[in-house]
Amino acid sequence: MDPHVCGFAAALPPEGAHGGLGRPGTAMNAPRTRVQRRPVHGVLLLDKPLGLSSNNALQKCKWLLRAEKAGHTGTLDPLATGVLPLCFGAATKFSQLQLDADKTYEATVRLGVKTSTADAEGDVVQERPVPAIAVARLAEVAAQFTGAIRQMPPMHSALKKDGKALYEYARAGEQVERQARDVVVWSLDLAFADGKNELKLVAKVSKGTYIRTLGEDIGEALGCGGHLTSLRRIAAGHFDLSGCITLDELEALGEQERVSRLKPVDSLLPGHTVLTLDIDNAGRFLSGLRRRGSWQDNEHIAVFGEHPRALLGTAHVKGGELIPGRLLSPPEVAQILESNL
Image 1: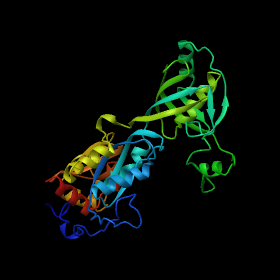
Image 2: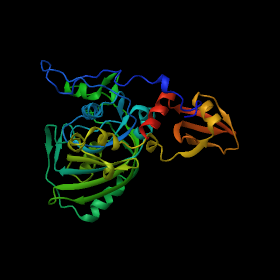
Image 3: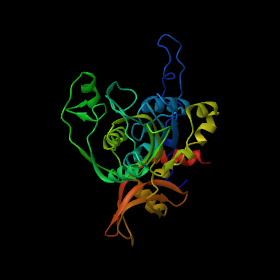
Image 4: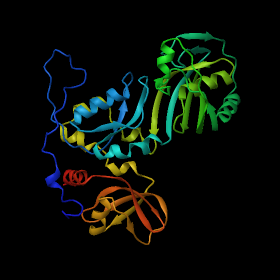
């Protein structure tokens, strides 16, 4: 390995240097299984199960992979299922990009019943008869909620006010003032599900869009109110269900097979222009130095070293200067290369 880019073996921690905790959910008085943590780098596409929080799902996968470092790319409600990209090791440095990505959801809306949380978990607060609704009316309402819209964040949400989550106020019976937010519904399809009292909703939305609020507002526009009875994320950015694995499937695999399900770190950079540096420039870039060249201005660059080929980090080009953004550390580059051997 070239000393400028990959000669970092001496800096690597010994295998198992970071001791781990026992498996999440283990009883306090039961013998704890010691997990020898290790550097793991990549993205796991989990099909999150119903009833599990995003953080609990992350901790279970982290335990199964024996990973030292992990993070998710934005929470998915416990009552929702579907695509939850989980980042490990160096991939956590680029998780914000996935957090900002558009999301696509499938949901079922029960018409005529409004709940305190806008989903099936809340108490029923109002019931109204469901009027006869023509298919053409559904198309009109879908058009009404497509494009740039303003949404009032629900009280039962993790959005914070004065350092406290809104759901904490809601559980205490308090209503607090909230500001409507600008979001974008890129596409919205509505169709009748079972009978005339349920709608199937498929929506591609921008970051920060509450599907519960969207379903509730659609019910109001139809004159009867409504709430979500199911919610499934079918895509997050360019990731979709086709690349996902369930927790049960992951647990059934052997250790190396689990690691093989990880997508590479650069899978988080699909919209970035690839720029490859030679040995000398790669080493200097990795140390945080700017490089000069005949490059066009570009805000989104994924920088790779040439020999051996390895992701070094992100950058942008301005005035022919390559300016480092988020960089992998030399040990991370070496570990990824070693895992690919």
